[in-house]
Length: 390
Image (cartoon, rainbow, N blue to C red; front, side, top):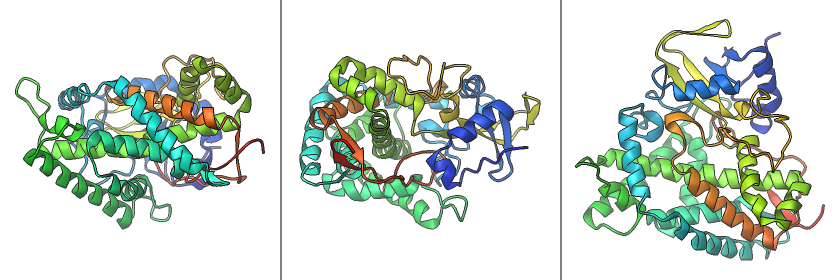
């Protein structure tokens, strides 16, 4: 019997992994009538498609429910050679920022957030800690006003969400992204008039052989960084804290031996990445597992499923912090591999070291988490923690 994999199902938001397993074993090239796209779920297929941009194109957008105005001007919505140009210019801007210089600001933000959080008998890890660190650091790097951080985070969460009843994005979610774009447009215009020592200015002035990003490219690249930093990085940090909650032996080993932290982060990226699925569009007919993906068909690359494929990772449903999961796709793969991957690892490591030093034991105060409805991403809405054993 053909399984149902509905991207607008609350069950998929909460736990997609049993359904992924059924797809990998029985329907590795799965046509979803409900969603109008193919889903690739095995590691080998997902990795190959992510590498083959000529066949599986991003130029129609990489979000399953694309936001208006993004395509053709962001790292995720272009193919080489245009993508190579955008990536090189964005990387040139990033290169002006020394990653090691982020360590102390991250620790300071973590200590500050934690001091406030621990004044409460129960604190929300996401609102009170992870988003405070990631949004705070991102706003420092971009030179954005701290007073706007909470509202921008709210709009980012809205813009990456989907409406289950509409089976796509609703007007409020689309308007949230438009508001983010307008906000960033004003900031870019101010940098053009008066450059500063921040990442927006670096993007606006990045140059390779006389080539620069256009204003639209600067705005949308900045918007991509904001959405990635505000949602993806915060969500990954939260998922990491959740993994360590669910596997207390692993957490206690990390607390006892700080050298295990990088390995635990890599395993969480494999085991529970927040970036579950990204879209491509086939440019030609492709035969795969007895099915024909036709030119023009939408295809979802299920990174979250590929990372649980036993063909690549032994005992993939086991959270093993000493696994050393080489080749996982927690940050994607191919030309669209995450530009901020090293920053994500560093910020997560430093923030979690501060957190675990102060809170080596913690537990959820609710039995069932609520999950953000999203056809691409997977993240809890809230994680209320109490210090100590349950």
